Image (cartoon, rainbow, N blue to C red):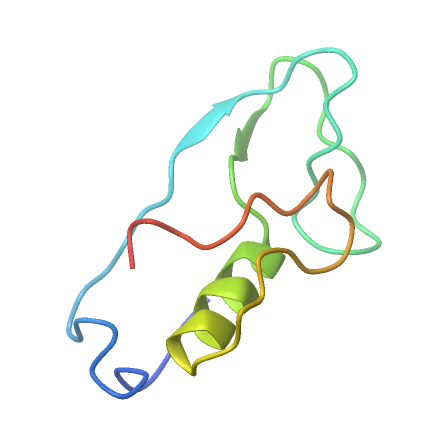
Length: 81
């Protein structure tokens, strides 16, 4: 995912951020995006979904949003931003 701009100086620019990935365990519901297959047990998958980025962007613009979409998939804003 590429973002352009600093969200009104809320985010530092000129960075590449790699989000943590962990091994998938049984019952894990992570997906890369809607419609993608659920990763197999033992695969590496991002700990954050795209909805976490959307929440971060909304909060940077002043919204009091804490979650978006499926609460099991959205952990909230990305602390790395």
